[in-house]
Length: 250
Length: 164
Image (cartoon, rainbow over all chains, first blue to last red; front, side):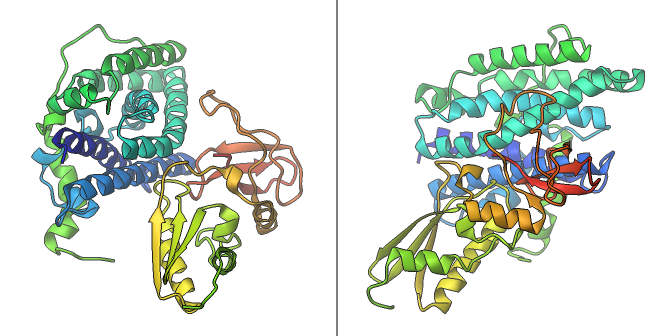
């Protein structure tokens, strides 16, 4: 088994699963019905994408590993998602900004993964990119609406930028397994993705009347299993049923 | 198993399996059946998901197996492929007609760039009154495959099976 590919798959699957779970927390609590449905639709896409990735990872691992054991029976330190996606929903501005900063990274990443040297991963990317395109359009539009909206929505977007900006540096910082994946043609160059991300964020922020913060210190650790305190609480809820009643089905 | 069974026979049996979310559509109408492979006593059905998170896919697998068993096929296998990715271009003409009669506007023509901000597919025909004076309420609807629209002529809301 290629350990670097397996770890990279967990990283991709965990990003999708954790953000999907965060969005699912909003189900029934969205600001208006249509946007509640939009966020739960996106949650469904992301959880679906994580299933495809975990199914592939489980086939690679073999033995008793399944998509469910990967999602429900690993502890926080085994999760490799970036810190950005585990951050709490906060107000609608923070939920939207987290989504946009992530979608603007995910879109160029998956676009490139369609040409990955790993054919299974390329197929997953080809399937996922159509959905990710909807996500980026939706979150971009809301960043503009809120940033260029009322004084209140503009201020809230600025607060969200303050809260979340320091989690964006990690997206483009190579982990060990990403370096190995890059060397074997599985993963494209993160610098190219960073360039596209920077241009996208710059464009949308300009249209929204929002300022990009000065280059600042950034958190990292998520990719290697060192997480903020929020992930443990998220997993406690997500994994409760399988931990308390192992093997339970509905 | 029946002797001299052909692919076409299996396809016609699969016409009886409907999409659990949009029951007027068969899985053949929907275009999710990509191939049928017959070997010895095994029937393999190759399917592709519409959207990755669509909860109907698990149900569809169960129903394919059950329907084939009802028709005497004991050994069946479902294989899921992701590439080439499903597109609404694979929705059959009869499927589009069935959708319209069911009250869901079928996908119209080729989609514009999905990345153009604040854009929407315009001129969508209202399945109630056939007006094209309609507007999008949200690109995300009651299921992953549908957007919410409203008709400005008859003032009824409706689902649009979006181009994908």
